[in-house]
Structure formats: C-alpha cells, structure tokens
Image (cartoon, rainbow, N blue to C red; front, side, top):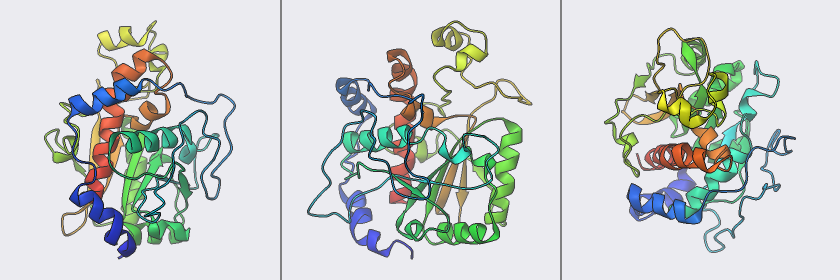
Length: 306
C-alpha cells in the first residue's frame, strides 16, 4: 500500500476518536462563533506552489503550531497541479491558495484531526503523491494527462489514494472529465450518489446535494444581489446546459472491492465557499457555513475512514 506509514498513525487516530462526530448544530455554532473570516480572493494573485510546496503568504488566515509529539501524524491538504489547462489562469490553480488554507484552518478548528497549517501542491509524477492520501483537483475537465501521469494516477487510486474533483459545470465539461477518467480507470463507471448516501451525512447531515456557485454568480444572471437570485431559485453558474435547472451531481468512483476512490462534484463549486468565505456575511451564511465546509469535511473524513 502507498500509505502504510499513514495507516499506523493518522488513519488509526481518525478511525478511533479523531473528529469526534459533531452534529451540524454544534459544529456550525462553533463556526458561527468563530465568525466570518476577513480573508478572501487576492486580486493580484499570490505566489506559491508551482511545482511543489505550499505558500507561507497566508493572506490573514490564522496560523497554528504543528503537533510536535506526532509530526508525521498530521494531515496536509494537497491539490494536484496538472497540465493541459484551457484557462489562462490555470485550471489546477483556481481558488489557490485561499481555498486550501481556509479549508485547512476550518478542519483544524472544527475537528480533532491534527492539520498542517501549510498546504501542498503535488504533481502526479511527484514522489510526494505516495504519501498523500487525499488530493483535491479543480476544473478537472481541463486536465490533459500524459501517458505516465495516467498510469501513476491509476496506481495511486488502486493503492488507496482518493481524489476530490471540484468546480466544473455543464454536460460538456462533464464529458471532458469523463473522458480523462476513462483513460485512468477504463473499467470503472462513475456512480451518481443519491442524496441519502452516507457521504452526505458522515459528519454533517445535509438535506440535499449542495450546489455552491461563485460569490458573484448572480451578476451574470442579471440579478442585483445573491438573495434575489436565491429567491428565484438560481444557484448555478452561467454555462450552456442541456437541461434546466442544472442539478448538482456527486459522481463516485469505486474499485472492485467497493471502496470509494474519489468523488467528482459536478455542477457545483464547493471550493469557492472555502475561498470566498470572507467575501460577505451573506455568502458566508448561505454557502460557506451550511454547504461548502460541511460537504468538504464529509468527503475528506469519509475517504479517510472507508
């Protein structure tokens, strides 16, 4: 297994006591008490991460001490840097590093998982991947993997790794991602998880599959505010859809033994609720707090305990 060292430490701790399952009411009360963050998207962009390593430019995200007694039993949030993006900013880099730093902070704050205050960027060909049990992929429809990356990604998943793909919308973007994953796992068909699947209730009970748009999505729909868009039932970003309203999907990939190897969050942008939690009190209250953080923590802890 790729993660034998992790199994003896972090995985065991998570399975035993670890996050000490917190009800939605209590956990969200803690988040509310902590208050909305004051950090958000940096208009000028920030350095850090191209080719490896996290950034120490924390943009106001609180720092904390690592566990000195068990430095190897600390979870580090990692995202994948891939090639082939069709976006000038870089599909893999969307929302980075704000989303990653914010999520790591909330994971440390709301659970008993010892979390690294720094975040990582890994490549499929990087040896760090072997010690990274969970990876985050943004705009996955824009991936274009080389043959060696396809092979390594397949081996990573088959040997215990897990991916969370996020922030892609419309049938066209799904088809692009589906094609990439068919190269990686040619014999696996993704399963659109029903809303009663344990993934949506593993730590935080969610009554629906969360659809999270960017914090300013309402403007492209012609609304004057997020509340106006929400009142009209519009919670999706502008794309060319075949069916309206475009519903969120959470497609799971299972191995032959039934272990979930990854989940693709389609027609939703869970990570934007992390990145933009400080954009406004309204966005924090309606998306970051009740949808993005609960869903992200559910996916992460489910992956680490199954």
